[in-house]
Length: 183
Picture 1 (cartoon, rainbow, N blue to C red):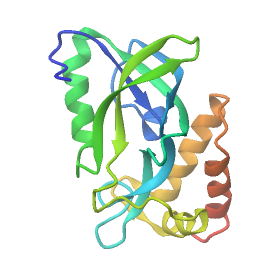
Picture 2: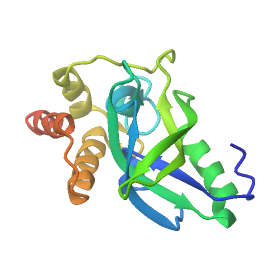
Picture 3: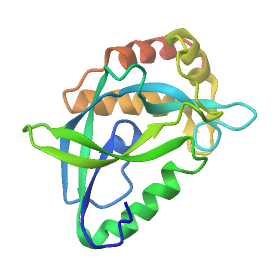
Picture 4: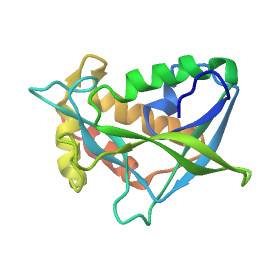
């Protein structure tokens, strides 16, 4: 995808892009991506942790390919395409722990669109798939990075999903576990 300002495109958000997209969009809708699940499976050494004390952030994890993730799809207008793509690449590909992909998502009205999506790269050194919720909570409760406490990232994501009428049981349980731990 070159973005080049030639055509608009859709972006799928599943974590911080829900509550802090950071770009202008023409439309925003609840959407579902099949084949991936939202998971705290990527260490954060830039935003919500440091190289010495990494945090954990969300990524789309393929696993066995049977999962799905409900998030938000943003439609970017053609005149904002190049700037938005550049912004997203700078934000999401900071350490290349994510892979940029174009995947089909289903909007809440059933319409299928192709969206720009950032998915986990299981071969990357920052990938931490398979951690228990308790292990995730230990990391998230203590980690702090330049963008603030890791726990804030989790709690803002859960709150934003709930505001949209979406409930992610794993994230809700993880939030409970993190709240039980000292800051």
